[in-house]
Image (cartoon, rainbow, N blue to C red; front, side):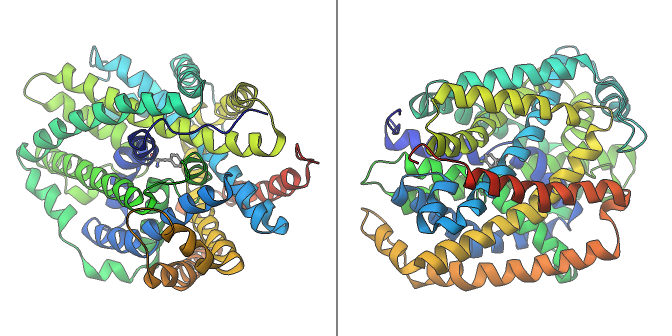
Length: 489
Ligand code: PFF
């Protein structure tokens, strides 16, 4: 068996955790989820979710991984063998998310290429849906796969495997580049976004909360799960990253650093996007709320339009934007994979390379679904089930198993025995009561909503398949992995 790797230094851990947290979720997912869920109202819910669940759960995951020296499945299994399958289910959710995350990265590779010539032309919507995706008529009309996306998917997986080839030490180095570069580009884009003519209309929508929207539980569930997705919690990765920490470590302050930089990046990115939306709204005479921002189209339809309409340096901005999207995505993508591979290695004692290659090949082929003609529909459906249900349930399970079965008191003792910032009773209350109660209520609400009407009017069968993956296949795989013989048996 290989020795457990450790971070080269404190900063390489913090950067890797920030690198995992800040990703497509901040620039691609946050803005459209925010725009579809009330703009300013969503922002309020997002901040509440961060305080009541995001930060407490991040501290819980890092410290549990640190305490048990294992990824999610191993950690939950160490608390009680009977919960190991739940840990594997969490790993499974991470794996499924990886497969479509890689598909979004493949679009980004293609757009980086296109940006050199502004190949998207004037009709960016048509370019995205037809030229790029070759979108079909519905989820069951699979159409063909576009060669550039296959190439993009290959490049994505090759980059992921290359980045994690040597384990945590390489991760520590790669992230210096993948965290620092996007930040510099982001600052430039924000300045450009908010100074565009008409930007104020978009910024008003972003910053003025319509409190009546906060009565809608869906807005809250969207906010909680966006926080989870963005902080990379409810997955296996923060357990794994915690497990690579040395015995004496400043865990609590580091968790704050990660959470604050991640949320600031999303909120900052929001300024660029909403500023630009205001500009676009002025140009086209369409109100901000009616611009085509629904679903995963935002970055790939609106940004190229904005880039076209910039007064100068269009190609440069285009290349910078998609390069930024890729550098942000890559460290998140490899940490998603790392969450899966560390769990497999812990259990089966496979070598680092064998595990990475197996997961990569498997993930690559699963990604074909999302780059097919029906890919966007499936991406939307699977993303919905994995986030709104998967992540919410994963965090709920963790709060129960770690907070109640293991006990927050014991974990708090462990955390407070470490140097630096300490945590108090409020953290325990969040983990044992506040977060779980809110999640149960929101989940209950969403389940009733789904029984009453299908998600986004997709055919019931397509929605049913999404539910099947979430509620049958993932738990089943969880059982199988938990039952499989481990290296110690
Ligand atoms: N936090 C990443 C993002 O916002 O893009 C997504 C992610 C990466 C989730 C890694 C989970 C994970 F393990």
